[in-house]
Length: 515
Image 1 (cartoon, rainbow, N blue to C red):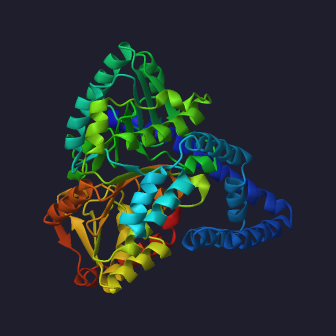
Image 2: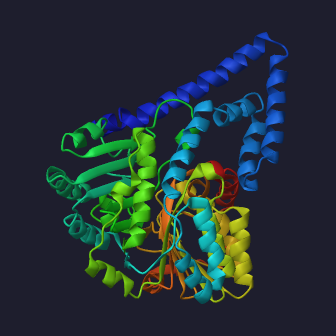
Image 3: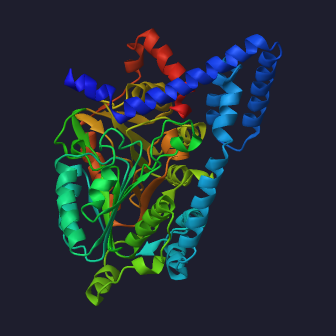
């Protein structure tokens, strides 16, 4: 009974209830008005028709367009009006205009090193355009040297993180989609409290929806009582708004601009297998040391300054390396590291471009891990074309999903991929949450970007792109080890699937871009 009451009166239940009430009231009002005004019903349907024409002619993903067009035509009385209301809000435009302005001021302060571009051009000419694209679109730079360590499970990252946090001297910046009270976060928090008392600038930012049910209301005030600056990115409010769809899904932790962590691991106990909601939780992360780490400081400050409405001098956060550190990083075997972010307002889909770039340029293999497999037409064509071309394409997905509908949609893609020669595997021990790509012993990506519409089109995301680094082999070897714990999905699997399940999967696929 106590658990039921807790769920009933939780933040997420109350906010969701208020949103549903708004939708029902709006729909009821429109229907009521149409009863009294003969031509109002016709007027609303005309709006829906015009809206469909607008959507079809917009510069966006065709599958995403279709996902909107179908419900609008199914509910013409208020479908078009709802779309226009969500996408035409002035505060949404102001929100993104401000974000763009801040990003430009940050990234324009740091130009890409011509020396690094020349080295990549000479050694890896096929990768030069990728670097230029990331630099031109996201403003982030490629760096030579440094050091990077790959973590195949959350427990490894957690152990490393505790050691590195103790070394912080100037600042600790933390930005996560989910922070949840428990052993992992509480252990980190004790270090943060101590560091803040020593004068270290400690800042924490978490997503308003991702942490809605994992942290109590007013949690920022609690952290500020410890001397820790804290902000909630886009608090989840009971008001219909397009910005509520754009969540901060990034995982960033930066120490002094010298050390940065990113990947799929949030700060919650299931990520280090203290809790087991979906069996063994396998997730991957990477630690970057050297100049490239500062790229994640830039990402953090971008959203931090937007949230606080107060900008500082970016130069004050630049790392200061000792001579020993410079010598160590200059002589390291790490090739090139490029941090990058993907933000919804720039309309370039940086994350998807890089994934497609890796697939399209692969000669021998492309190995992918993703918790969600919800593909648009471009990604489906790239994967199937690569397999038809003789490239060894393997994808690992979870056996146990954290969202049943995500797994159902994924099944709708399996059959087509397998028919083209793509090998799809499921991780048997539980849930695999890592987002990694590796190809041809040369390229790897580790970050927060899933293979679904929300990550590729709607969320704020981040990742690190590695070229000619030992991390590439770490990702590759981990993939091969993980395969030993996976089952291969064969065509026979679908012959045993119940017809109703096939129909459900197909229907859900139509609305996948809106999930």
